[in-house]
Image 1 (tube, rainbow, N blue to C red):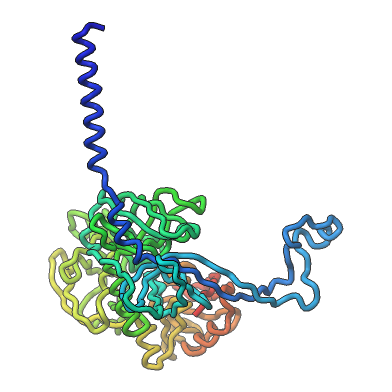
Image 2: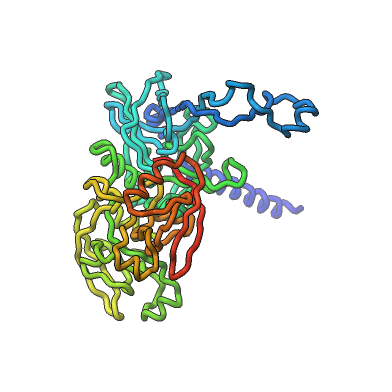
Length: 466
């Protein structure tokens, strides 16, 4: 190599090192963020007592003698009086302090069914927490501990998040307190099955069991989300993590602190996506919005002038990009609140203003009316004599509303179906259905007979807890 070539080669190497050094300097430094935010992040442990009602046990993990396996397989019968025992189950999660007076936010699934909730602070104090309220639809829960002057975290604006932005998480994966992981925002406004009310933030931040309920930070050290779910085939992190936007979570938290429950707006419409073919048939350039397939004749949408075939394009100026966006936007409007809907009808855009209602199950419960329990995920109406004659039925109740993502929806139950029987027992009225459903054990699977479009069907429902 000539001296000139050697010099050029050395210059190239130096330029490469300089470029790498510049890139390294541009990478975010989370040390200051962690130092300031860590005191406001907590570890949450829960315990609950459950019935061990199986008449079998697993022989304490030891090898089962062959003579017993011949008769009983890999499980042995419990000795007389050994059934129905109670055992303690524990779980771990994370959370963060949102009020110096002791209010803490976490995921609803972290504290679900807990008999005792313990919060461990950054200074190693352990405090027993009271559950203020939990909302399963958004997976948000608020806890309260008896303490003053606690360190709180600054809250950001999750609506300002951009794809590609750096974010960090602090939590307790597998019980390791105050573990820090970082990554970028991979996508926003993600819709996940059974979570129609949450426009999830997708990140590649490493999240594992125990991180649930912990905060997601932007580079300014502000909380922009609550780490809630991961997509995994192994049970561990695989690069897809999902967080609840803090704007959504705080709206829920404020209602839980004020009322102990969450009220959501309701239009009373059945919607479907606008496919490319449907968009063309309606004279649209692009598939967007939520197409109204049917309406509750007594719902707010029908009373406000909406019609089947309308396509809702905007809610209060916010674009309805796809059908899954509509429940989120309407759900965040308090019952009785006014909304301005931009609607496409007969090829022309128009604005329809109406007052949203409350979800019928919540409204009927407040008024002492009849409806199926929330665990079933439906709202039902009684059949009058005319309906029964027309359908050729002597009993049953009509499904007026199906909760998106609920167990009824998962089983394939639709609005307009008639519930004829449940658990081999005839359904005579909404109130009697509520009594029947309340009598089934948690997690039980019951057959439901439906009448739909002149035919009868059976579906299986696994009932959740009330």
